[in-house]
Length: 542
Image (tube, rainbow, N blue to C red; front, top):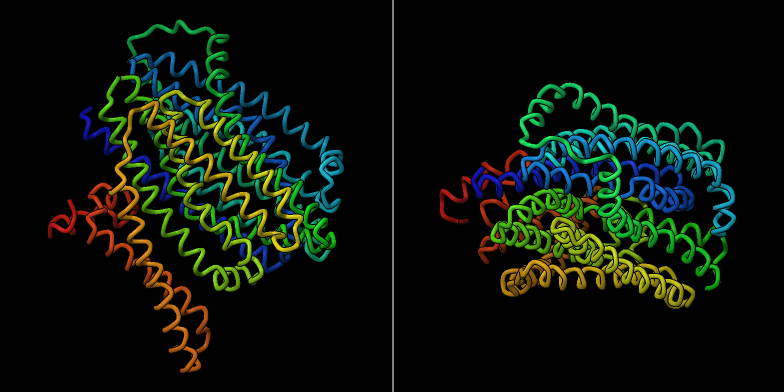
């Protein structure tokens, strides 16, 4: 396979995951909007209280298997040791089954003691209990996703993500509507159970794809020049040696959420809020502000997932030029996407939280955490790069350092009445900023990659600054115009028209600054390649 083909494969893999992730994220965002409007910030606070516990235990049960598996399989296939690649998958699948089952049972049995230990709202018990079976199902699903990603086939993962979120959305909304008359605690439990049904649907489609392609997969793997020499014990050791650092890194984010869960409601009470008020404020931060912040990062999540096997392959083959190309592409796209998203959330915080969630109070934490979009995206992409070259412990350590700063700021500032929930938002932003900057330092140190300040920093900042000015002027003028004509839904129309106009304005600025490349557009789903061809035809892009 030529180097250009490999580069195209990497971009295509990222594009497939981006398209699927975007569809899944839109559905996920949609059900959060619906749920918030049905059960309010307080109900969403109860629902969110189950999630940090679930995600911490889920990460432990998965043991970094998908990423470790993708890297190990990509390494073996690059070395033409395909039989060993399949052996690694089979061992990883068994590990996922056993560990996932044990952790799922532990969560169900310890739900009430955990809630008491963490001093959570007692009404969150049913939500924690309802979500516990999902750990077992997701753990098995993760092993299949890791297998296909190791083959650099992102389609099965993409399909399972979409089906998982689709089933999850309908289950959550249906159960919440049915259970809300019985109380917010039962409604929150119904919302939590959506993770179980969704994961089961995602696993079923992966099993179907695997069974359908079984002969083709076996035919490919049997062509390897190796004879299987790996023992099960050695495979387990290898998965653990790679998976544990990845798990520790992956644990930090849910641990940060767990720290928020423990500190924020309690420190808000220390600032003078009642329990219900503290739960509602926590819901505004975790269930309204953070979903808005996480929404734009779907592309960087996809890039990170696609980067691990792509860079691992290039690293195994010793192709430094290919590593640098993929690193540069991923980081540049991360900056171009996350910076305007952060600016947009900051400038339009109040209309977005009011129109979408009917919770305008969430604009307060959103303004403080909006710039976290940029740092979260950089942290995700740089983690994918470091994992791809086998430096899995570095991003884990860096994120842990960021988490310590996050916890300290949360604990101190959230209890100060002048800060309150703003303290939690500020802690999240600073924590990810520290982790991202440390990661970038090590990307440079370990791969020799040099950041082009003009291309990756100055030009995007210039474009975002001009876009920000445009947003302020355009939104104010449009608001006045629509209100003067007493048009129905003027506020909503002006907000979303401003978002669309700002996106077009920013895109044109990037074209003028020569920051958009052919491959950047080609990776967009549906219309990307046609648009790229059209612009290249008229020499607007290279």
